[in-house]
Length: 432
Ligand code: AMP
Image (tube, rainbow, N blue to C red; front, side, top):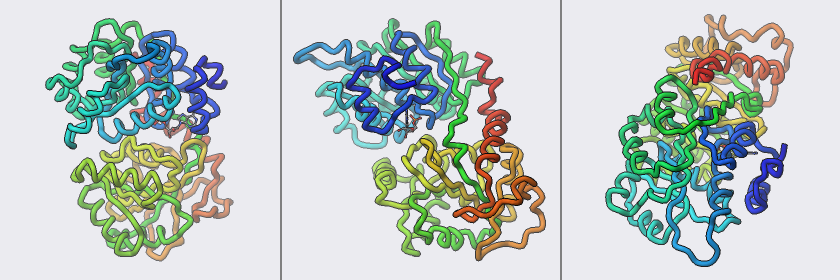
């Protein structure tokens, strides 16, 4: 299957080819034809599956086909609502990238920054608007934004929107949309309340589900270090002194923890920046841009700040602290190993975090291999749950020092992680 088979027009095909996309991902090959047929979609897919291009490319194509020739007054014809500023910026970058040969204009609005720049761009006219709910309503109430010409509406990360308490804001936005429109609804999970909510927005939708069995996840090498809490910073510095690590996203549980870790790394001359909810929007975006452009090698983040952040060619994810919720582990490590590249996920586990590790091992159904060869190793009595499976024991070490058989582990992980995880369960997503 190629993008040509999906009937995408040349200007979009050219932009995708320049991004190095040779084949559509499963969500793209399923969603693009349906959207081009002008049908509504109820899509169960998470970030990392190629979801953005799955809706952005056909939206661009539809608007391009309807673009008047010559000079015209641009009005907003497509609205994409997404929960966080980082996601909004990322989606807008994608529209700009995929639409660079279409002549269509897009912009993004989000809160936490002055609105002047945003309103200046809006005044000049745009075709596509990407927005977070609060700022959108704000600007609508000030008459900077009208939704009366919207033909295509996308609600992205619906489960997270509801989690973040945006339901009333979303309802207010939807009340202002034209009744006659095409709506695309995406959510990483499909619990009954999301399905019920989707029904209020969609009209006879086509259901599309992609399980995140991406080859990217198969490529992730994992390892856990048993280390005393006070030694974690020293261990992190020890690991990051290895220059073979191109880029690392380090997860901490708290904002304060993220700041502390960043400080220690910088004192050790390892350039790191932190990203979390206490930072200003500008500081977060700058840190993220620096990391994406490889000016900063290490980004330290909390889960909330980092969810959905997409970084090309991220080589390492490091769990400085074990996540409390096992599913979060899967979310975190899925940041690396994307687009067929290999990735490494390392976790630091202190004595108080053993139960979290046990839960994760249970969830992924294959114990994370223990890395014993490091200067801060703790003598471990209780490693029953972390013994490599028998068919892994004959394996030598790879570059990362992790006992690992990628093929076997990947096959098992692929089946088990997503088969059993509550939020990814197949049965759950079938209950539309
Ligand atoms: P998304 O789920 O939209 O956040 O996309 C995840 C990542 O996959 C992004 O880095 C995209 O640039 C990349 N991507 C999307 N579609 C393709 C494709 N067809 N081939 C290769 N990479 C892709």
